[in-house]
Image (cartoon, rainbow, N blue to C red; front, side, top):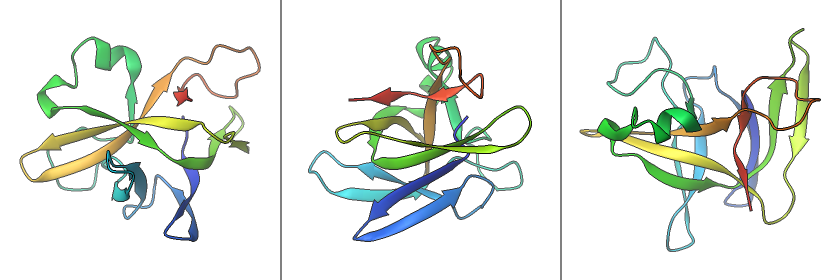
Length: 135
């Protein structure tokens, strides 16, 4: 489900994990610049946006995110981490030219980014949800 990421922002490498309430993700802007936005919302955090850090692609298509004015964005992640059923972490590299699809949701002044997930299309997947990798 992608609970950890590595990315480069302003020349510095960051390794962040979703449980950290201060976790941010890089979002490509239309002008080519990058912006850091809060990665989802933890149940203990105040706010009106959905708890969690992920948005299932099928729920986006079904309109469940429409009330949050969803905007698709590119997340320039270098590596992401998935835990298998035994809890062992596995890190995966993205190739040059690839990114993870994100969704920016808004509710009044609150704005957060969620990682879009899909069912993996390969047998060796360590988790039943996988980040949507685009190129």
